[in-house]
Length: 352
Image (cartoon, rainbow, N blue to C red; front, side, top):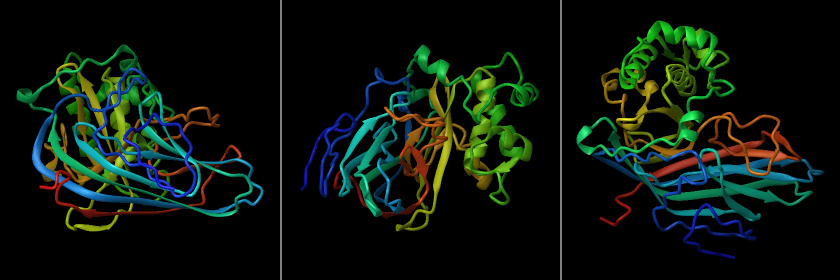
């Protein structure tokens, strides 16, 4: 059965068989049902734009034969002021629905697998994406957006692995001068991290987005870099949030995408949400200035936030960050998932 819908995010209908869920228009979610505003400021968009076919296939392998309740949760990309998502198609032989997570406004695909369904569960998500490089630090293009009190409070609060007291507070006091505008404070944090941390995925402990690990070891991947940035920003009184998606290889027009990529955003009343990509700044020092306040077009965003909770599901602990399928078998996390993520370049979503 094939079904086409023009809505997104609020449909709770279950659809059986091979199904299609197709998004044809840009969708902007209201801020009334969540405290998150998806990049509401209107930034300066660069002339550089990438348009892609994106395929996200995954297989849940070797489900227990006696499993009574199996649910799979996957983040879905949304359109915002930096990216445009169209023709989103979900292929699954099991019932599913798309839900909107309340705290951050993330869109989540939920697949419900019948009891005693052993073997493999194969699902494919595909869509077209157009992503623009941009810089937020352009007064001529500025569009100010107020941050709600609820959002400000949330993005100043700690997460489980992103504390703002103790060692983080002490480091922040050493690095950040008082009585400066928030933009200058954030720049001091960015300069400190890019000058003292090393992009290094050897050993253990990296990849959890643990600000204390990053503070102690001074190495890690993008989750560690930006967890430390967010922790120090919040400790300085600057709202900050975690953003994650996939990095698109620059020097090829098609191929596999090996892993996720993440960055951070901080908020000032003058500029709204300002992005930073400290990892890319360390890997490409010649682009350090750009990646404070700007992002390139070589990425697709999927979700925002840490410690994510699922609607009507009791978790022993929230999801640390949300980019890969999260599987629950009888209420317990199940890790037997294989992924195959690919892309191919397109001309334009407008057919030009």
